[in-house]
Length: 183
Image (cartoon, rainbow, N blue to C red; front, top):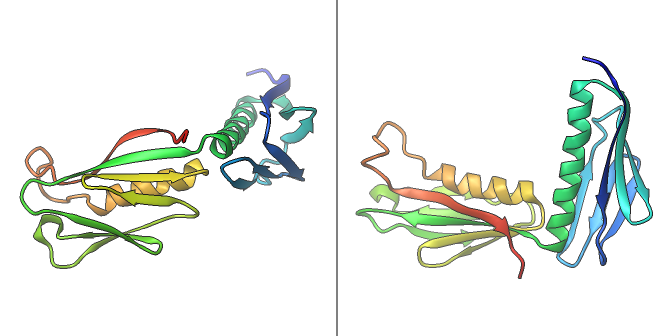
């Protein structure tokens, strides 16, 4: 596959968002908070700030280098979306016989009485993420999409049933909506 001379991706920076680039470490601050990310693993990719946009570029890029450049641009766009809008995942608590109790204690989500078990199941809250438990829903919110997604996945995985037919034993906590917090 031929090399592309220059691969350049521009990400606009909206009003009210400040960007600091120190080498390959990017710090983005906005109305919802701050996200810091280090892209030092990407050796042949340049990250620059020009006027009101961030430029990610690489020269003489083959296929993998080109994919890396676009991936970094997508990560930076997610960082900007996080500090302006925030991310929200919604999970549904489903049980058929034993009523499940879910509560948040510190940096853990504690799931009690799942399938009538005596020992509680514990899911870790990653990073600076807010977890809200209502009657049948769990709402996970934050500015970093990776921390929000990992926390929701930890909660869902804590109630994974092994060795039983999932069509019959539907008990668990499942992600049913992903999106922006916008509020």
